[in-house]
Image (cartoon, rainbow, N blue to C red):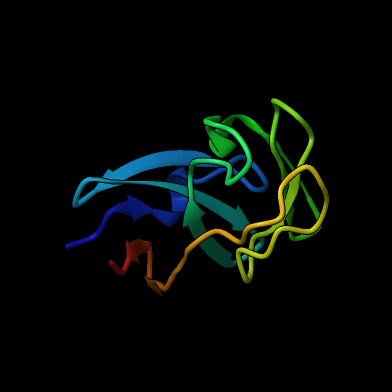
Amino acid sequence: MSDLLLSNLIDSKPVRIEKNGESICVTRIGDEVFAIDDTCSHADASLSEGDVSDHKIECWLHGAEFDLRTGAALTPPAVAPLKKYSVSVDGDSVTVEI
């Protein structure tokens, strides 16, 4: 079952999805799609409301940045990494693996 359609994802515009009780931030960059936990590891803020540049997403609340490819915390105040989810793209179907 597909979670999303690739054609509905806007480049560098994160979206929040819910799957199996998990809040996930999904971001398309070119033909690649990345998925990490949607909640910042520093504060209870939704990353899907943040800004994307290169392969990083910045939390809108305190400016912490995370690598969309790995979930790693790149800048303070966040120090803990986020869970990264595997994503498969088949044609226009995008599936986030839990």
